[in-house]
Image (cartoon, rainbow, N blue to C red):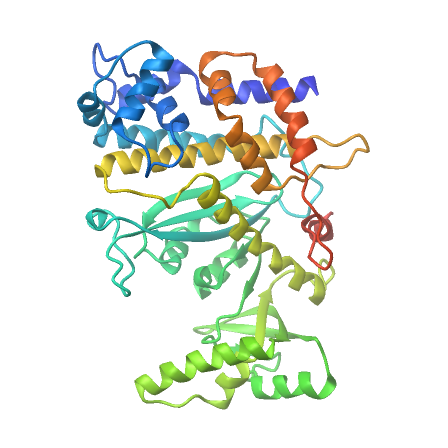
Length: 447
């Protein structure tokens, strides 16, 4: 336990060292001579002031500053400090946190077949219209300004692999295309269909990595004889034999290139099919065409593709593995409910950006804490898995203690021991009957 605390203490000291933060602030021209508000104090104010920025005023931030530092800053002076230099400084701090987020100070060792199991998705929310020049909406429904947060995390280490703030009109496909070179060898990638392109599949193959994704129904899919797959026949076969699912060896065609893959097909519920086909028929009528039998058959199926070897995961295990992707939705729900991420009021654009990036930094800090606590085995030598929702709720209540520990040198080891004990007692993941267990699914990939 002492070794664990010493490693984490070192991690914190590196992340929030005054000299390092103020050096970054000077580099990005944020620190002004004789200013009472340096880089470290500015970061602290944004991290630990009122979480709900829709309720927060400049007066509130200025009062918080005077309470902690015994110095005064005017509302006007504070408003002036929310500038482009401040945005660049916070962006640099965020990137530094992401670099350290691999948590080599905690434990990166594992017995899994993969170096990382990476899940990526995005969440969007509407912004005040005055932000539309910086954050354009995706169009439709009168949404002129909207933001997208791209998030990727590692299921094994618990760390954040990517956390990027973009306008909503930069969709998931564009993100996938622009981040292809970030795909690493010997990793397992789980992504929503919006990120899945043939170039993405090809890049994973080139890097000797692995994917579990839904199939894009517009792709050309061939059987092992290199004939187009007959989805009408497949759907009838499932019905006739009363099968829950069916696995087929296939090729994905990209130009002249054929990429071998495994396809797992499963019938959807009658309700899901009804919703899918109704939506497709409305679109077809509006554009003046009719739906093919092949398309109708596809709407009755959930189709998952993977290049995982069969000896590593059978069809049922592949299906369960894909279900892990839905955990990211719980993470987004936690952010919005606990951090009030989507509660935004019209303010100076630089202030909005600084406050949002501060929340991103807060997320990284607390996911690092969560991963650190989970990395320590319990009395029986088993890993402890915590609920992200419960954990964030606990640290929100302890935020002022965290503030004193990080920024004011208050007994880090004593506080971490208290957090460690509290989290293990109050934040355990509750296993629900009939639900897929993350730990059981991950155990599939133990080498």
